[in-house]
Image (cartoon, rainbow, N blue to C red; front, side):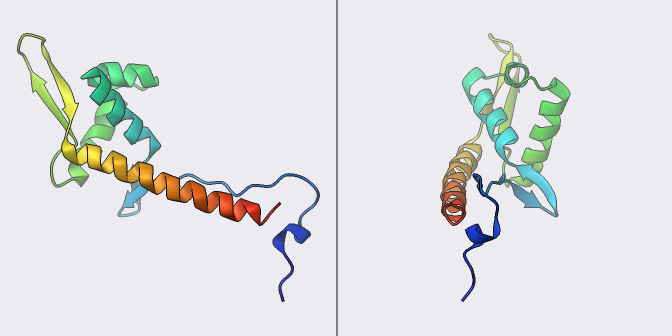
Length: 121
């Protein structure tokens, strides 16, 4: 029978930790940063304001958006130009579904991390 992992470690507090994102072709494309950007675009109606609120450059925000839009069957971010309010941006239903999926995935991941950390107590 294997010795409990906790018995292999010095006194102290140990936790299992990690970060979670989706990849395609070995390249990250959907994780906490893109999720926050999409949520802020939904709140503000503006890519520029969303990026500013995150302390992110406008170019970086557009790079993330272009990458996200290239991964979906339909664009995650939809822009409009002109009009009374001068245009703006919104997120698609597909983006909302991806955000919801990522939240659920993060919750399952958090539970996994807690369970694994309990073996170290």
